[in-house]
Image (tube, rainbow, N blue to C red; front, side, top):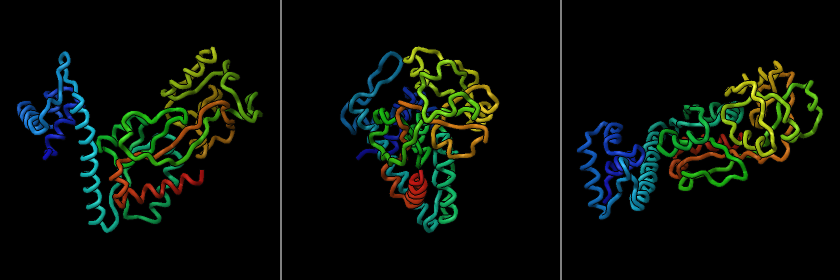
Length: 297
């Protein structure tokens, strides 16, 4: 029978890359960590790590066991949440993580109805980009996440064992002042904007690559990660920007207009959680509220 404590130690060694770092993270002594790993390897009957330089690398058996450990931890967290919800007569705390534009529109809409209909369910929220959000869900630091990727991308690494719930798709749009020469167009191609100045977020690798493929280097006037600040700077004439339709469903500066960006993939928004967490009443209630809100987009 596998020991949960030994699996926790194994997962931490895999995450940190050494017995010493895992011991410091878990508050154990290094000999205690070594002892737990000896016991686990004896129980499994084969090595779980090989030494590579100064670090450790999981063997195929070790990798498999870490994947199973993640699932086991998910079940235990779901059990904790389920019991807490039963004690609270259907209520409970749901820890969420979500990307920026969903925090502007989709989530406020969902949470408004949730508060009105299920006041016993509490939600805490952290804003994070999908890479960080995925890590928080995988490690159990968040129960439910809203993530996004592009329709032409494969399932991101690390999500195969988790539950993905499709919610909606939206387009990328060009946001500009209403007096911009291209404001009267129905849609705009990125190549038509080669001579423009831009107000952009720091996460813009796809945008930069697309510009390079079209043969130009974008003129970045400002790098800002707050949607309201971006709108203010565009309205002030510092440049144009790209925003998702979801974000543009929120408050928009009156002097601005947006037009779809032609030949750009749709963005997919989805909920991500461990399968067992979907059975927790409080989590299921929040997910239903989000799905209802997404249907209006």
